[in-house]
Every structure is written in C-alpha cells, then in structure tokens.
Image (cartoon, rainbow, N blue to C red; front, side):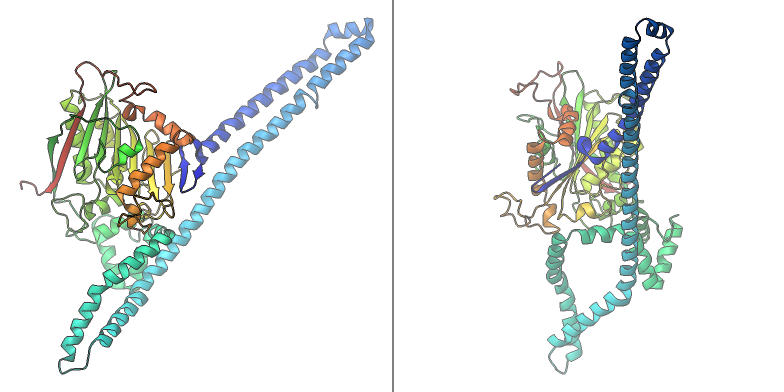
Length: 528
C-alpha cells in the first residue's frame, strides 16, 4: 500500500503473501473440483438405480422429469461443468503465481547482469580514464593559478596541493546533491561491486595481482562473484593494518540508568527516536520491560557509526565494523551486544539458559546492520532464543539472511545513500515490512530548518528525519494491513504500558521493575 511520500512493501499486505495465498488457493480449488465431480458421479449413479428404473414403469413421465432434473444438476450445466471450471481456474491461479515468480527472477538476474557489467566497465575506466583526466584537470587548474616567477616550480607545487585540498569541499556537496536527486546511481553502482573490483584489477594490473594475492592469503575467491565477496576482498586488501580487528578483543562496561520517570515505548517513533525511552545514544542500551505474566520484554538499542577512520581503534563503532558487517563477518560489536543482553537479563534473574523472553533488536545505520546480523547469528539466537523482532532505520540489510521467524521492520528514505550500500533490496515476505519514504516535498515545517534536512544523500540519513518517519508509520498503522499485523506482533514491546483503550497501566508481576542499562563498548588489545 502506498500514500503520498511513503511506500510500504512486504508483510501481510505484500506481494509474497499474495503469491502464497495463490499457492494455497490452487490446490484448494482442485480439491473442491474433485468433490463436485464425485458428487456429479454419485447423482449419475442414481439414474441407474433399480428403484428409479422400476418407477419408470409405473410413472414414466414423472420419472423422466426427475431424471432430467438430476442430469441438469450433475451434468455440464451443473456440478460437472462447475468442477471443470474450477479445475481450469486452479490451473490458471497456479500458472499466474509461477509466471510472476519466473518473471521476477528473470528481471532480477537481468538487472544483476547489467549492474555487474557496468561495475566492470567503471572499474576499468577509473585507472585508465578517470584518474588521468582528473590528474590533468588538477594540474591544469594549478597552472592557471600560478603566476610566473623565479620560484615558479615551488609555487606550482603549492597550487597543486591547494587544488587537491579544495576538491572535497567543492565536489562533495555537488555529489551529495546529485546522489540525493538520483539515488538509483549509488544503488546500482554498489550492486555491481564484484564487477568494479575486477575492473580495477584489469585497469591497473599491479592492483589486480595484489588483490588476488591478498584474497588467496585470506582464503577468499578471486575474482569475486557476489557483492559480499567483493567487500571481503577489499577488507583483506588492508593487510591487517586497516579494516581488520583480528588482533583485538572487546570490553563491555555496564552503567545502570535510573528508571525514575521512565515510561515504556508506545510506538515505532519511540523505538527509533535518538532521545527516546530506549535510546542509549553512543552506548548500547538494554531495556527490560516487565510483563504481567512474569516475563520481561527486552529492547536492545545498538548505536550507529561514530568514526569513519579505517584504522581500528578503541571505538568499535567505526568503518572497520561497517566493512566487516557488509562482508557478513562477525564483529566485536556483535559480541558486545550479545554479552550486554546476557548481563541485563541476569540482573532480573531471567538469564537462565532456555528462558525465552521476547527480544527486539533495533538501531540506526551501523546499529541496524548489527541488529540484523545478530538476528542471523546462530550464536546470538542460541543465547537469546526469544529474539522475535528487528527494527532498523537507514540500514543496508537487504542481503542479511535474517531467519523467517524473526519479524523485521525497515525504515528507509529514498534519498538516503546508506540503505543502498549493500546493493540489495529488502525481501518481500510475510515477516519483513519495508517502509520507504520520499522526502521531496514531504518534510514537516520544523524539520525543514535543520541543516541536514534537505533531501541530499547524506542529509536524508538524519536520525531526526527517521524519527519523523517513525511517527508517520504510527499514524498509518491502523489503515495498512502490513503495519497493523507487525504492530500486533510487537505488542509485548509496545503495549506493556497499557491494557485497554484508556491506556490504564497494568500491574507487572509482583516485585518486577523495569531495567535500563547502558553499556560502554571498547575495542582493546589482549592484556591491554
């Protein structure tokens, strides 16, 4: 279902559910057709019944009329005809579902092929055309800036350095604006990452040999055949100096938070708000909400990227974790979140093995990727078997293999470059609802004044904007079947503070109190 500015796909109202309904309908129609055919055969046998034959001798006219009536009910214009129509309808329904899936699969393969080829061409062009032309442009601009003098060479070198330093400030905003206006450019560029990596190696053979060597050392396939494999090759190219945390371990420190005046989340906007009741800011926050049956509902808020340095440092919410997550590798931040939830549950006595309290994982940007990766992680699910929901904003998780049993709600902005970074659209399935919002002309008045509120590629990633999108989701829930079904399933996390339309606070189990703990996470050297 779609309305101005917002598009909702997947979930109870999604195409996948409709196709599943067709899969169920086809055999059901065949079964009804078979039953009608059997009934027609039974009625036909009545015509041959000895009693009816004997009656024809006594009352031939009436018996003939009865036989005609039976034939009308059982024959081509009755049960038999209806049975044949239902059989044809069942075949049509089954064929329609298969044709749609085949067409969708064929279109997806065609697009993937185009993306891969485009990436290959772009990769070859970068070292052979783009860089030489860019270098000539920089050198030419520097020459125009430099006045003739006895020390011309030194002045010229200074001009070259000046032009290079100005490039980010001059080109950055333009690129940001272009990507915001044409978000498909980045999506398809990233989708062809495997072609891009191969193309770079072909365009500059020494780089290709280096990538092949680093991939071989890491046990990776080269050339890469998927986007995740391409990201893994790039990660391995760091040679252990960048984008590699293998020489580190994680340290987690708990900071309990007072619950005086605290309230449970009421809707999606509360779950995604940067200053909401379950947000820990730069820390992992674990919130335990007591339920009336003695269980706790656990909401885990995972922070996003805090530094873009490719060198792994003490702050693990960095580019290294981003890169490893996109390569579908386990990160120290995932280990930290798993330990944090275990610690918080232990504080309430709910940490015993096998206790399946409901768990919701959420996060913005890298936090959302981490949440989805944990949902796909067997280690996390074994320790926290109650995991049932994931909520993400501005996160590229379409390629993360989240199990069917986990309900996912993904909020994305059309102009946001980050959700496109994995080159994959979110799956359309019953347990995965995606809300995409087009920000052009759809910003509330108070948000238009924000410096990052313009629908540029980076401005669209604003957490404040996603909070407003969460509020929009809350408004649409009652009218959209996918959102309504998701909301009903998330009742343990969002309905703990009310039991009826009057929002009367229930009494939790005796002695149960909410638990809120922030966890500081650091990446450290062993023994450091």
